[in-house]
Length: 377
Image (cartoon, rainbow, N blue to C red; front, side, top):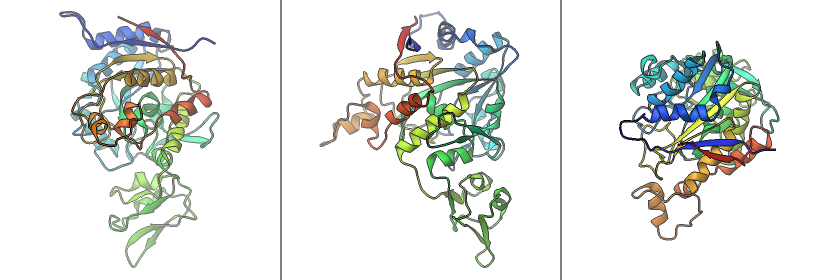
């Protein structure tokens, strides 16, 4: 069987010529975007709006290029992301939208509406079967993503402190999950209450269908019965005080496998397409409220129908590059006694790991790691 094609173009432009957003549109067209059945259909453009204080995320100009192309084909695009699990500026839809607006994403700048996939509190999700799932039988995906007819991922390819890098699979698998889904990927799902943070408001009780939320009338605090807790994570989304969190973390390998299975649930059975921009390659996720100096030089833009091949092509390109001076990667390599792992992402964060995700994604039929690279000028 022929290997999937991954299309690539660099960031060079001609003086007085077309800009990078136009070059992105050209790349998508060359990669076959126009063959998608989009007319009169809702198209979810999944991307990351960036945490407040972070400036490494993709500019809205690139999102507008994708949205404009969808509209030219008669589709109805919207930008989307799901609420976060951790404290920050995007853990419910109101502050998530405000963050998106402050970071430049508006209907005017992006060319289409911005919708938060899992609703106001991160509890508006759909249980979606995971075909060929090994760790999971179903995934909790934001309803707006599952209501869409077509999924397009627009990814800022960068480093990540746990998964090695954040590419298309992470953008889709973790990014489309509701707060409960994110909890499931990061842990066994069972939760515990931080008594110091709990106010005893009991709002979480309304979200628990299993009688696991118990109120202590003396301490006026909530606690969770671990025997009754099924790990759905809905109490996390209900708590406005970040007093409820997972009891334990998954290993990086299990996290990677769950990300692949969540991505499978999102994409299975409907049209999808993927683009990744390998630029401003910060060592950590755009979920951080800061971004450290890039660890590698900018590479270019990649596009494919196969998200697994796309991630593999992006990481392969990065592994050929020298480290950027005065970066986390360069500092690590210069340390006395540092063991060179011959991998810029693991050298940047040695406790991270990324190969499990791509291998598992291929195993469950999400895509292939082999590919043919097609250069577009």
